[in-house]
Image (cartoon, rainbow, N blue to C red; front, side, top):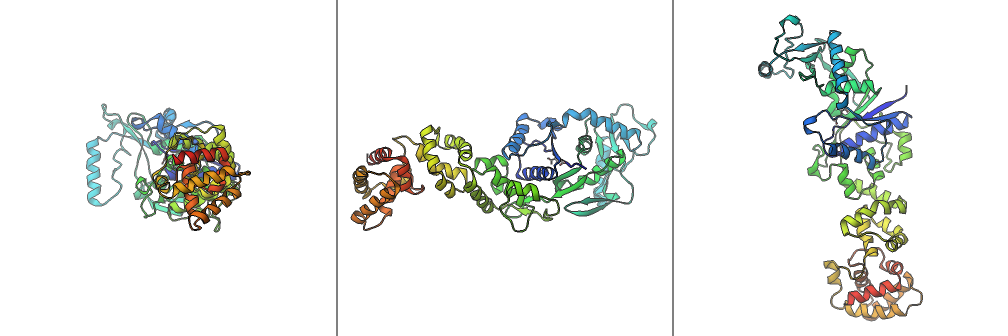
Length: 467
Ligand code: GLU
């Protein structure tokens, strides 16, 4: 059997981190087995529908570098097919028209509440003769759920889960305006698309029992299921905005790499021994449903940062620069020109290994792209006060005399000056130099940076700082 998974998000305006993990697991499972992952947008909620929300999901997938097979399927475009199946179930005697008024339903709800029952619909139209139907009411269609016994779901993560028939009501599959309910639409689409593995959040486990009723009534094969525990915030509550970033978009903006995100999300709920860093290749070879954890995973921001730092070290420079470019613009309003790219590329290994995120990388390398005169931040301004003036003047003179402008020569000069002027404190020379060359107090080795900037630029920056 060729494995077909699916990713069927409801477009809510952003891609939640849990949705991203679900996509990743479906993708890995399909890729591991040479199967397919299909992509369906569950866009039947027309009142709240927006194309931007759909685009947010598509962008999220793209950023995570998860591809899918075939075209994007719109659930809404299949409404007629959903109604067709509802009518077929009616014909088979597996479903029936229900003409209850909102008021009747309310009464039933009240009654059930009093009696402490979760299921309230009393099935009053299940066996009524068609002739009893009122003429002026448009009916809904309800499925006939089993009246007794129990229903069991065999789940690859949760094991066997059973509920008693009393817990399952004759739920609506087609509304009176002929639009399908979620329960019907999902089953019909999964069946028609040939989906045989449903990997999704365990908030859908209760729906599974209901959806299986539809599969059985249609005589369709029930797919394999794997219900993933939720992702919790560090405090144990369902992961949401108040924990910090909850959407994929935000992690991108915070400067996380897609490969780090994949690795982190993979490990958040699935394990391969104690392995923390798992390459895409390994993930595609190893991912299985058996090692998905049964309990909810807690999001750990520090761990994510660690994983990201690992991938910052590994990333190929050209690719990093491609990812970083928009950040220079958005954070510093700087377009990288060829000279800046050349300088940053020369210093990239040190920059990369210091930076936990793309944002940090950009902030610590942007000085290479600055044009004189540039702004000094407050700390840099402070560093440039007092004795710093004398230090910078001396540095200017000595660096000007240097024949070979290499980081070791620059360092030697700085050391000599520190002996002469600052009682041997190298920092008292290096810090003003850093402030002068970068406009900040944080950067990679400033001697190395000066070499990369070159003699002319270094002297020009020193001069500007002295002014
Ligand atoms: N559209 C549903 C959601 O975003 C997913 C349904 C499913 O996986 O069956 O939660």
